[in-house]
Length: 407
Ligand code: PMP
Image (cartoon, rainbow, N blue to C red; front, side):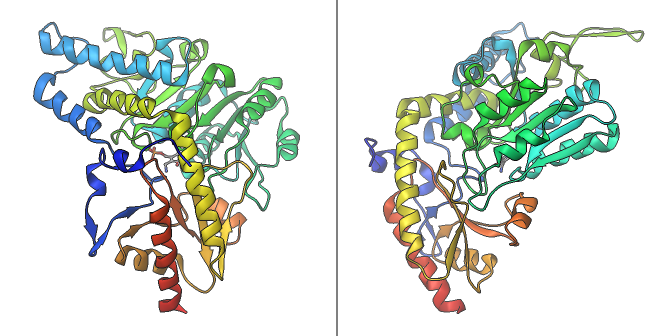
């Protein structure tokens, strides 16, 4: 049980207070994106109403104000991830963008034919496809860490894959499909023993776990603001300073240059070298409020509450005949994926929606993982700080109704 006042917290989220199909909304699609507290929505409005201006080059008051707020957000992420230097925080459009940036700059610069990249079976497509594109271009080889039936990585197999040919290991911190928390510190240490750099996909981890990139010794860490109670279209790439300095720029354009002539252009220092063009200023500014909101609740408290929901939901769902939970790792966040015997996940999703319950169905952008479990997809309920045990009871009733209608 939690020390947080969940009913009070629910008041901070305007979207929760509505009926869908005549029933109070139950929002269990938090792994896709979580909802935004009023403070974050207000921060967006205040920016546009009060100090919208393009940043960095402006001499006027509003430009200075916008620039200060933008850079304050960078410092907030430095603290959030415990990065050593503020220059190590690169603003991106999200996790997908961050991974592509690393593949297209670090990967293209430093990898050559025959080099190997290791990912895992439980990666989101955004941590598979950019590496496949790089492999195709450079003649590199992709290797994959297998998972066991509980949905945990097989570390012995990982060690066998590592060699001096391994140049990059890119692994998800927390699986969006199963909720598994991976032992990323071990994964990083083992990779460093063979001289590989490691990227950690923190899209799911960042709103549930404390992240300390220095303690992890991660070379790259990526996340999306929209999974942190913040706005869409904004994310962070953390990279170690020395590595970022050595990387070529990504997109060319304004802001990422020192001097441009038609003969030759010189590039700006990090982080600006990787931030071409006008960024997503409003969203960068507003996400700072989301970080403050989470800090105010306390990440440990949030995690404790979500863990309680996970335990309760696991118990309650296990009571249902013909329901099989996919992914029963020892270390999990509040994500439950399941299949119902004889019922397609899409039908499950539609019938739950008719009862005002929002879940996600399908492959969750992890098709190879679904193939590993021999299924086409799952129904996934994923929890955030504002969810309650009562809502889980609603899900159980909803699923009984699904079974009654479909079987
Ligand atoms: N990795 C994981 C583990 C994710 O859950 C997601 C989002 N579902 C992504 C990457 C991609 O994030 P985005 O769509 O915000 O770029």
